[in-house]
Length: 114
Length: 112
Image (cartoon, rainbow over all chains, first blue to last red; front, top):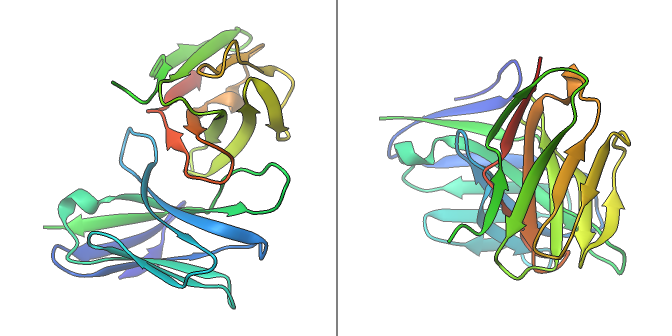
């Protein structure tokens, strides 16, 4: 189930289950979104991205859904494996002519039990 | 063949010291960044450079000074280190400002 830990929301699932990690973003001008995976002791790694002109994008075992109306992003991982255990971040970039950078959400820890 | 590499991986130092963290990318990217990750895993942008020019400087104490000798390098120098500077610092790069960023392995800085 999903719980809010002392510092980081944590989602605990069994191997083989499907996982859904949610993210609420704040900037309605953001037009590009990325999900990153951060394993212990490593830097964030790109998983999948989506532009604001789409509402769904699929990768290998992962799907990102974007709901611009409520400013919500989700990452679905099919057949979750122990190697999927990590902290997952959503990140957004605002479009426009000025310079902007990736703004990260707070992160969700995914724990996969064998 | 590491894409974004930063050194050192671990840095333990006393309060008041000055230290540097180096970052190099071999991806040919124009834009480089420094991010700080706190104990709650929150990642916050500190600086962004594009072709050696400072583009973004978030509210960071001026004890932190980034230096970009060329577009493949962005080093971070920190003066008069404080306990609150303890964190993991990530260097990253991207082809331009509106695409994914590639991150280094991080430098865990501990100030004692």
